[in-house]
Figure 1 (cartoon, each protein chain N blue to C red):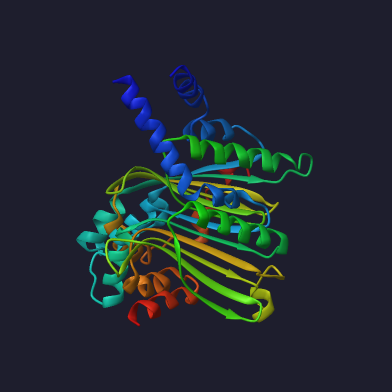
Figure 2: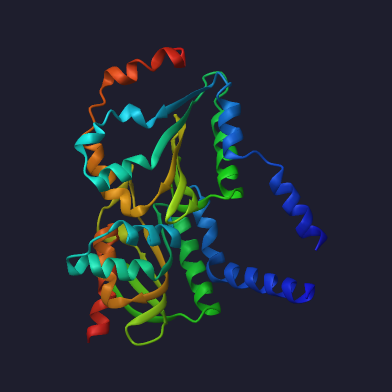
Length: 184
Length: 171
């Protein structure tokens, strides 16, 4: 019995640790702005809306209940941006994510990676990586220009409802592009 | 197995949020206050049933403020790390955390989603200092958020009420 419990515990730590471990360090990195929202927060957010009358609120409640984590990392530091890019590449090698689509405008790039979920509309994991932002538009934090944004969303995500999430939680509008692909 | 037991023992011997609040209320570098929910000065009779229920779940607020000391500026980061460690080591469920340069924020709660006992908000403002707020209630439920905010809008609390607290703080 002890062996079974111990093995189960070890497996649990390995599987949880593996999924996002390469990005965890960005949660406490000096030149990175990080926002981490847990499953509990989404669960509570869904419960705040006692009466859902409009489609957007209904969609938001549905998608919120299905999210297990949301992390957004932003950096103004070019070296950290390069490190992030490398980390994304190595994460992709070890995970079951595949590229969904990409948009390129000279040196600015938006890439979406997903791990497919239960059907065409659902994904288990969505990774959005935007790089070279400072070349295109000037978004700054405290006078420094944003270079790279990495967004990681996990759960049982319905891509058709992403818009409700973006609107209610003020996420980057670029995320909406995943929906375009699904409709084509 | 032994390692697991050892690490569990190590976790339990650290300070809890409650003991941290108690300890720091005696520390001259901290401002510590407890605000009863009556400070909101809301005429309960003028509220509807939902709003009254919502308001009744809030009991009080514990507030701890640390301002960077001119004599010991490094102490800010030290104390900040202590708080973060307590919050991550404890029974509190993390809701969200924000980290932007030297500004940090974290929100967590104690209890279950439908019966929240405490909500803890931690905010560090650069090198200025940090604030730790503990909202203590009984059966706080997310469905009460909207009626609670509505009740809050009827609050007649004024600067006068807060001024009356100041002698207790030694200000």
